Image (spheres, rainbow, N blue to C red):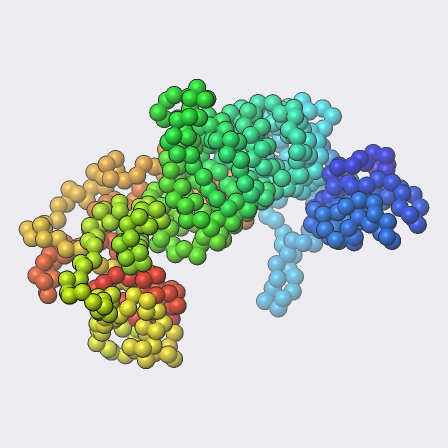
Length: 592
């Protein structure tokens, strides 16, 4: 390619290596060297200088060694989409590619691998008119081509297209490709550095899933994109350095993207957000009037089910509480945030509707136990300061009432210094480890600040054994069940299907259907978790035993949930920190 065909800001890749991508930052002579040079700032930072050489600055690179000067013949400005399609699905396998197809033997020697049925597969993939999904990642696609109308003719049934890591930079080209593919529902253009200005983008009426990871797209661009995405359900904006959202723009996005377009999933992982905001009822009312929206159901993000916020800078507990305001939000990812210093049971208790937290399902049993521990934790730390509790722990009063947890009884003795015993917890310790030996259960009154490590070392003298501690589930007194008998008809799962169980999160999909959009989701494993909650746990399953009398009190008791206790995995945490309450039982086991 001639030097004159390169221009500033153009996306290029190294000739022969379409994964080494950069941006043209300079075209011209370099002092001390003959001819014309192309100065490239490489995306991966693998260069030789910062845009200056021998004391002369030609451009400013993004880092000290991210750029280099290259001759024009060592660069490629890319190919068209259809050229990439033929290269990927109709091209012959190169010798280099065949050499890479091997496995290592037991003696660490390479053993070549032959693909059985290779010709049959290639023949099927080469019939473009039958393709419903195509992956053209890292092939140097830079444009729709000189005859864009050919795209629709060649790929009439394409529904999913992966263009990750190519040279696209003009939104108009993206719009042209989508326009020529009327059935396209999922598009991934991650790792394409797109222009700051969005022009010439038509209505993308069929696009339901749009992946814009590491493209430099911020909220301002989303505000423009909203007019072209009337059917969007899933939007990925990972790794775009989104740090703040202006309030007017944020609310405008709520109503134009979340409300009108029925957005169900929003992926904001690996940004630098430090706060989550949801407008209160007064603000929603004002905005509804301004937007001429008067329906009661006009709530922001009213169909949002999944919000991924992993690897941001969230550290304010108020941001956690704000997530409760999203009407249907049940799948939340908060991993790798400063706020994750908060234990999981506290997050579950504060998040009223969450069913999947950080990719792990929240069972009915885990929710109940988390909420009880949380209430006890708040009670032990704030000691009845109602105003602080109301401001810092919005769900405290509600949870206290739901689980019937009474306030601690005030002392009735004469005035004077408070007795130390009034702040102690009665804890029963039981050894269950095989090598620990038989030991009688030990009941002690301990300060709530006692750490789990001190607890074991002091009372069991077990410094040489690595221990695991578990909080045993509590029994629930059931004085009204003295004549209780199991009712077989209550074990009919259908009885609970509508009244007791949450609705199927995705009614349009088969129950527990696997999510299969891999070709358009190139995020790291685990970042995209759309776990569905199977409808196989009817409410009666949480009453697994008939009530039986307590040998000490004579009251009937039942167990809730499975018999497995809760693991206490932080040995430096105090009893108060892990939510251990009065009259609790801790099981002492050994590491396997």
